[in-house]
Structures are given as C-alpha cells and as structure tokens.
Image 1 (cartoon, rainbow over the protein chains, first blue to last red):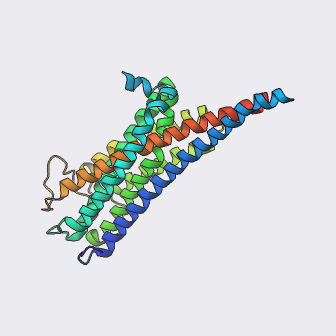
Image 2 (image 1 turned 135 degrees about the vertical axis):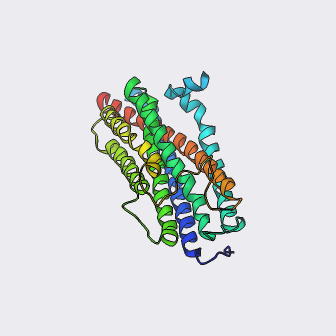
Image 3 (image 1 turned 30 degrees about the vertical axis):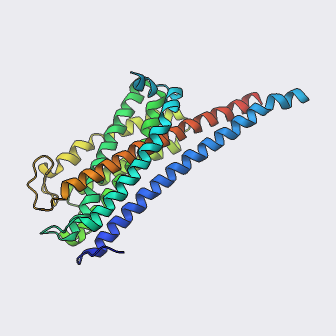
Amino acid sequence: MLPELDKYAPYIFSAYGIAIAVLAGVVIWTVLRSINAKKKLDALEAAESKEPAKGGQT
Amino acid sequence: MDALSAFSNPHKFMAVSKPFAWGFTGLGIVIVIWGVYQGLYVAPPDYQQGDAAKIMFVHVPSSWLALFIYVFMAGASFISFVWRSPLADICAKSCAPIGAAFTFLCLITGSIWGKPMWGTWWEWTDPRIVSVLIMFFFYLGYMAIWNVMETQQKAARAAAILCLVGAINLPIIHYSVNWWNSLHQVSSFMNDKSTTTSEYKWPMYITFSLGYLALFGGLTLLNMRAEVYKRRAEMLMQRKMVFG
C-alpha cells in the first residue's frame, strides 16, 4: 500500500526509489564481487594443489 | 592493539573481518529499510515544505557520508603513500565506489528536492552543489586511475596523490555556504535554526546516518576481502606463468 503524500509525491517517490536502487545496486555489486573473487581463488588453489599429484604420475 | 594489528596485516585481517563485513552489511540494510518505512509512512509533513521535507531524510545523511568517506579514503591514502601499508591502499580503493554511490545519491536527491522547493533541478552558481559535483569527479578519477595504471604499486601511488589533492575540496564544501551566497542554508547541525518543525527530522537523520554508516563499514570490508582474494589469485596466476 502506497503512503498518502501531498502534491510532492512524485518527487518523494523518485528520491526514495533512486536511493533504494542505488543502495541495492552497490550492495549486490559488492556481494557478487566478493563471492566471485573467493570462487576464483578457491579454483586456482584447488588446481594448484592437484598439480603435484599429476606431476608424480608422469 | 589486536584490532590495529589485524588491520595492518592482510592474513589477520582476513581472519577477523568476515563476521564484521556481513554483520554490518545486514545491519545497514535493516536500518535503511526501517528508515524508509518511517520516512514514508510515519513522519508527518513539515509545516513549510510539506511532504517534500521527507526527501531531506535520505539527502542530508548521504551528503554527510559522501564527505565522511572521502575523509576516510584520504586518511587511508595518506597512510598508503607515507608508510606503503598494503592494506591501506586496499582500504582506500575499496571505499571509493561506495563513496561515489553516496555522492551520486546526494546530488540526485538534492536535485529532486530542489525542483519543487527552489524551482530548479540544478544551479551552477551554487558553490555547495558545484563543490560536491567536483568531489564526485574526484571519486570517479580515483577509480579510473586504479583501472588504467600498469602496476598496482604505480596505481596506489597515483591514486593516493589524486585523493589527497581532492581533499583540498573538503573544507570548500563544508564552508561554501558561509563564504559565498548560496541557495543552501548555513549548517544547522548543533545549532538548529532551520524552519522545519518536524520532530522527526533529527531522529530520521540519525537513523539514515547509522544505516548508511553500517552499510559503508560492511561493504568496505567486503570489498577489501574481495581485493585480497583478487590479489592472491593474481599472484598464483603469475607464479604459474613463471614456474609453469
């Protein structure tokens, strides 16, 4: 349910809408960046830990 | 001392920062949602500005955070430049996108409030508006330097210098309303002579400030952790390229 506001309602909804969009965007971007960076490092470390075993077989 | 040690050593930082990063981010989200609800549904209209005063609840704290984050970033840049602390440049770099977001929010919500109250979206002769826009460009320039320099060391030095040069703008932003004629009112913090009568004004400013501050803390720590992961990954890849 939308709040009852005076004649400035379009300005207020725009300001709050943009604020929520900007903050949500920063949160999502940061969280995804953090998760992806961790995944990439884990994959590289896993690949590196397998390498000595692979080298031993040859 | 343990906390200081943790924030100067990347290994200790990674060990202790995780709960703070997620905790502050979650807390910030909850406080901001609460603030939006209070601002839109509970706070009464101002006797002069009507409901347009509700825009100030998101605008004023975002301007405080934009300035605070720049001061924080300049401090980290100074430490990075003088002592070459590895975590200090990671910290300054991690603050920049969040500071830029709050500065953008400050400019856009101020513009939206300005149209019904001042009759204009933008006023180039207003020193406060223009000096905040310059700070926004410093944030963007700072981030651009990190993306264009060849090495992290060069980027850290150049970005730190740019950030410290941009810090000259901070007192101009703060005192611009006293030094020149401005559409903005003089600072009413601690000396409230503003016209609004809403008893919700300061509680709302404090609520949004705490929410923004918690978000800044949490997101900066998450960004710093991502940067440490990224640098470790780059180091592993370089080692692989050299040793096969």
